[in-house]
Length: 136
Image (cartoon, rainbow, N blue to C red; front, top):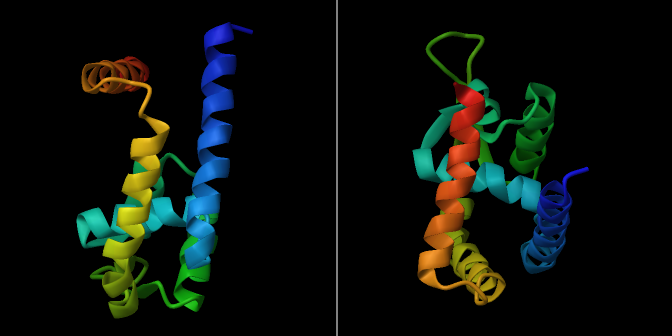
């Protein structure tokens, strides 16, 4: 195994674990937050676009969205095509979002404090380059 991949996996696990601790206050998990954040960024999305954007299997997103709807974070409705399920943040989620986002930003700043702004830009560029290489 390439040591680089091991390091990436380890940092990913650490990031998820620590993010879950931050989100515990809001009764959320990192996987749920990624869906909420994604929907917030796009205002509304169909399920298919969520799982494609997040690179997650469709059944996983369907379960996560259903759970977030049960918890009052999301609202779903039928799209133009009856088979489409459109997802939006609930009013309660919209109201809580800035507070959660502030906690996440504080966590991110703490997590990245060892990297300069320039190093963060380089790292992001390298990660995007890996994604672009796989897409071609």
